Image (tube, rainbow, N blue to C red; front, side):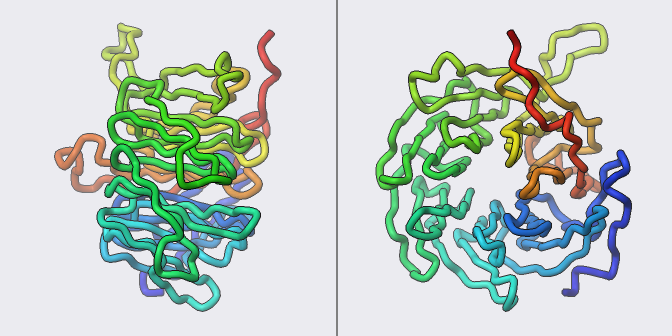
Length: 350
């Protein structure tokens, strides 16, 4: 592939320093996704391309493939078998790239940009779900050009996540729709976000009984689906700074850009426009790790399939609009080797 030189990043993961991925995209990074079968990392960018990198045992990376959209790529995922990368973008299209053949085909279409695309492994086979700014979600059988079904949302889709059979959709105007995918055409529950500001990201618990929601105002809520678990719902502040070194007011707020759950332990990460990443244990209600600040906003995060590698993207997230896009802004993808004490749950507080 022309965009990949022979450069590899070769620093041992065993070292404490996070490793920079070789040949990152030249424009802002929108999304990261590891294959569920091997250490391949897919990266979506505002330069209209999806890149696929192989991550070696010592953290060295090498570009393996690239395919394009007609507009910025906003969301990516893999199928269960790990042989296809599925992507969506501002060109209103969903695409699927076959890793074996190198062929990319269009598999989904909306009337506005597709903000999120997810692969869903159901008992009757894999389907793809897309959430768009045209105020619909659509379900697709990748063998057919037309959607299996479509659901009208109350507003534009800003975020969507699936942990079968749970699907959670966050829209504009702080609306949240919860679906049980055994009956996917109507929401199981509709609610206003528990947080007062615009939803930036929703992420389902791996246990499929709740979700985390992050906003532009430096706050995350932990929300369970069933009313019987409501006593476990709570919210907390994060990705904030004091207005001055002498005041401990945490009044300067930043957007929470992404929330990723650890696939084994159920702990989770948050990243923000302030350039920081944190690992959290929702059950002990405690922070497990705070990363050193990055030289720019952290826009996207992902754990690999067994949770021993954590990837995070440093790039401009448009949180300050066009005026914040200064020349020389970094675009980096970093790999962090997770230690057990950073990602394992703590004993619950008595």
